[in-house]
Every structure is written in C-alpha cells, then in structure tokens.
Image (cartoon, rainbow, N blue to C red; front, side):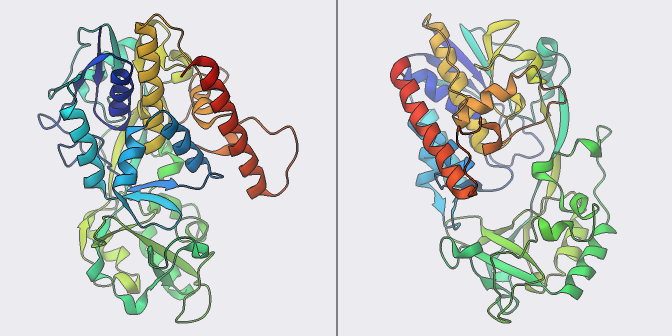
Length: 436
C-alpha cells in the first residue's frame, strides 16, 4: 500500500509521519525549489512564513493543551519545536531555520518516505491521497481542488517585519515579559507616551499600502492576522487593546505602565533578530520604514524583512469534509492544514496528524476516528465539518470550541484548568478504548 501526500508544510509532514508510523509507505510531493509561493523563502519543509511563535505552553491554555494532545500522537512538529526553541516567556517560539531543518532531515532520511520535488497539477496514483497543499496552493493543484470541491474562499494573511537586535535603541526600550512570565529578557519593549502614540496613529492611518492584485477583498481579512493598519482604521485606541496593549508591563525608566507598547520577540536562537509582534502589514516597504521608525526604540532600526501580505484560500469545509478530514464525495481523499479552515501553525499540524492517522486506518480497513469533542483536536475537527456553520471562517485553538463544564467555575484560570484536565482524561480514555 502507498499513500501520496501533496505538500510538505506542517500539515503534510505530520500526515506523512503518521502514515509511516502505521506501516504505510509515502510519496511526499513538494513543489519547492521548482516553484515557490510568494510567502516562502527557503527550500525547507515546514517553513514558518509568519510568526516564529507556536503560542503558549501552559496546560491551561488552548494552545498549550493542543500541543500536549499532539505530543501524545508523536507529533514531529512538537518534537522539532522542543529541539529548536528560543526564549519567549510563556510561549513556545522557535528558531525557524532549525525547526524546518530538523523536520526536513527526518523526511528525507526516512526509507519509507520518497520525496518528490515537483509541482503537482493532478492527483497522483496512490491508494490514498492527502492534499496538504497549504493556503497558498499553486494554480495547478488549485484547479484540481476546485474541481473536487468547488470554489474556495479567500482571506488575507499578513507577516510582520523583522529587525536586527543591534539596531534597537535600548536607551528607549526595556526588556520584560508581560506579567513577568518567563525570562526577563525574552521580549524587548518599545514604549510610547500619549503624544508619541497619537502621532504614530496619524502616520499609520495615512500611510500608503502596497498594491494588491485583483483578488483584493479587504472584508476577507482574517481577524487573527489583521494588518496593523487595518486595525488602526477601526479607531484611535484599537491598537492599545491589541498589539500595542501595555498591560502587565512597567517601564523601569518611568516606573509606570506605558501609554502604548510594542513588543519585539526573538526570531532566532542567537537573539540577533527580533520580529515586531502583531505588526503584520501590507504597507509599502518605504512606508514601513518611515512609520515604524517613529517608535523611539526603532528610530535606527535595520529591517531585514519587511511585512508582506498574501492570499490564503480555504475550503467551505462544512459542506465538503467529514470530521476525519476526508472528502465526503471521495472518502479515500483527505485534506489537511489551513486549507481545511483550521487557523494557525500547530492547528494545521494537528489536522495533518488526524488526516494521516485516518488515511492509514482506512487503508488498513479500520474505522476512522474523530476524537472526543472535549479535546482540542477533536473540537477543531468537529468545527470544520459542522454543517450548521453557514458563514464559515478559519478557527484556531480556543476554549470556546469546547463544550462547557457540568459545573460553573467563575475563575477563568481555574475553569481553563478544569477544561484542560477533562480533555487530557478524555483523550487518554479514548485512546485506550480505540487502541491508538
């Protein structure tokens, strides 16, 4: 038996990893370096094109719970992240090159995986196929997907700029993690007083954006990766409740909380590069330099990568996919990753785990599985196949997708802990019952 996996992003590599763990040989197709999407820069697998953060690690956080569940299935992405992590307070952030290099090596050196570096324009011959082509699928495979499932939906994803650490003016900045979680120097904070913030706001809302292609539909901007200039257009204080929120921070130079604050997070293990947290943008490069340098700490900043904006496409999954990530009209065909409507790095990887596991089970004449809805992976899988959802939009891990507890717990931290504990217990019981 042989499976084909199209795309070697986070979802694709996790799908391939599950298949070989269950004794299924895999042809793994990746179009790089023959062809690249506008967002990809390297030839490595599982390339991180936006943030280098995989979000919180805490058990009582949605992102932390998701990673725990993935680890229980032997997630390659979690394994790689722990090998390539960089300090980031309570978050799991990685050196993106090391992260991708680790995964690429695992794929290329496994004797049960055949890596085929070429663009796929039609479904390959295999006993089962998993399409993990990503939200930036090439036109070739995109036509095949549209033929299978009709037109997808589009939204925009925007990446934040990266600056060199040595170019940050530390006389106008300070190091501190929010609420002092994690290491004291995990984040560089760039504060603004009220006058500086208002000047920055006026410059930002009047700055010139890069020209987008004819498929530009600003209403389709996804809330979870909102360009900073779009957020600013919603009101003068919108940024102060978003990426520029000052809560949990005290500027040691003033002894007070800043009026507004931009955090810079380490981009690599060496700490030589930092990204502007939450500053995804579609401004022209010159405008990014002019406007973002208005932060006193960034007045001489060296931008090694400017923010970019690109199209993401996802299926109307409630109309097309089963909860095991198979296509309703062709159950031997599976989808995985952001193209299914899960949003986020690890959410995409988690969908790859489930698609790979279920593809293997189907080949072995076993019933496919949908995890309990009380688990984070199970809840996300159920969300993408929920036919009651009419205005389908991408969904990331959050406790809101889980069913409520039997008892009411007012304290949010205690409630989240109880939800996470229930999820862990239910997943363990389910795996024992299913022999997973």
